[in-house]
Structures are given as structure tokens and as C-alpha cells.
Length: 202
Image (cartoon, rainbow, N blue to C red; front, top):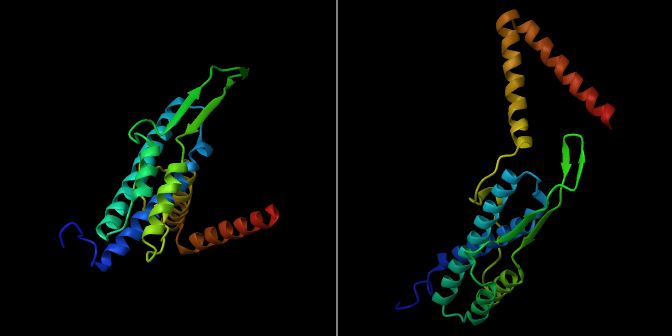
């Protein structure tokens, strides 16, 4: 057992698969960060912080997977080379620069925002090396909603949560004031209106 706590532990493969799956999901999330850029300095700051959390969380999960591979007696030399190539992961995971406004249309200013992610080639190499040394493991991609890193809640998601609450509240208000007949009539009007709007949109 000395030096090899995972060698004979069946649950170690499951843990290995989970760590690797989370790392792959975080890598995908990390590469999509530039698509969410905004000209707002506050929003950019929050996105940078999220990118750093995702980057560090990705390497933390790969480190955990490496420990399991070592415990099973596998060579991790290729992983270590990839990790060394990544450098200091605690430094900025991305570089963002915001140029001064170069055009203005009324109150709206236009400016150039540049976002450069840290190189992901070492991450890909690290993932590939771990899957090669533990071939009995199956890569299980983690559901993004299960990844706990700087959770964000956009206005669009908030709107979709509020719509049903507003609908229920409105129906209850009509029921409380005018009775079941009026409440049912309101539901029918709203439903038919929504269906008609959808058909017209098509």
C-alpha cells in the first residue's frame, strides 16, 4: 500500500474520470470566454476573475487526476512536461486591454477590446497524456451546471425565471378579485395570444 493508495481502489478510476471530465468541460468554458466580452470595464473585470477561476480549477482537477495515475503506478512524465510548459498558472489566465474610444454616435462610444487567453496547448497535452497512461478510464464530460466556479446569472436567465412567476401572480390576482371564471378567461387569453404570436413569428 505504501506510495500507492489508488492501485487497488476501484473508486479511484471513477474519481479519475470525474476530475478529467471536469477539466475538459472547464477547458471548453475557458476557450469561450472571449465571446462574452463587453466594453463595460466592470463586466470585463468580472469576466477576467471568472476566467482565472476556471483556469485554476482546470489545472487543479488535472493535478488530482495525475495523483491518481501516480497511485496506480503509471508514468506521468509527459504530463509533467505539459504542466511545466504551462508555467505559473496563478498568474493572469488572460490579458485584456481596452483602447480609448475611437468613435462616438451620440451617447454611445465605440472602442476596441482585446482579449488574449493563456495558451491552451499545454492543457490539451496534459489531458491527452493522462488518458494515455490510464486507458481503462472513460472520459466522462461534466455537466457545466455542476461546475462550481464564479457562478454567473445573466439577465436573460433571470427573465425566464420571472415570466412564470409574473404569470402565476397575475392569475391569482384576478382570481382573488373576480373569481375562477375571470382567472380562467385570463389564462385562455394569454395562452391563445402566445400561440398566435408564435405562429405569426414563424
